Length: 294
Image (tube, rainbow, N blue to C red; front, side, top):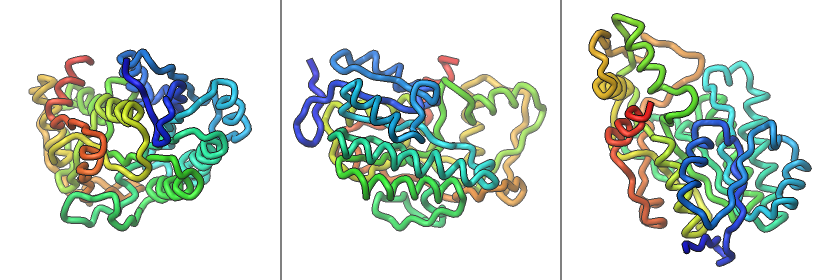
């Protein structure tokens, strides 16, 4: 039997997962089947509106929740530029609600954030204590959410990730597989560099945090390795067996978007690997695992 302990050595028995219908939330459902000693409560907006603090309190009390995993977020980076109010509500105010409730009832909080809190002007992998400087509405609201959690809930963990994809939902991998079949030629930017993250690997890392216990702070998690979006797409095509679509490398300014993208968003994962003894798979290996399940 594996005991799940928080930083106060109290066994974690009831885990609330918000945003359970998204990419990461669905992968949390998959990995939760591997952990029979803990009861997971999976919710999305239909079951629990995290913008309603009173509703969160009722749920936490009714189900004796001792750990909240927040997978919910506004993630449409481009649309956020014209929908800042809703983006802030979901990425800043809602996490603050969760933090207040967690602190009030002695629960731990694990919150998922993003590489977009950085401006992408770095030249080496970002560490957790590097200066933040978001250059998009999405990034600014995610940073505000981080800051609210840190100020409101001492027993909390923030995990920043990047380039998330999954077997569930809509994502870059699925889009490229579709376009690779539909089109004879496709242009993809080559001057934005980062690391893809298979959501199932991140879910397993979160599960590891739950098992070993919450050590408060900010952590970074993505898969291992580095690539551009162009390299990512080349590998998607190779694994997916797509040979009829010619891939063309583009500069960022050839593919303008409403929201600025970080040119460099590689995350240093040393802290989470050392603290939680997490083994991080290479991005190509995880991509192959994902595509083989589609």
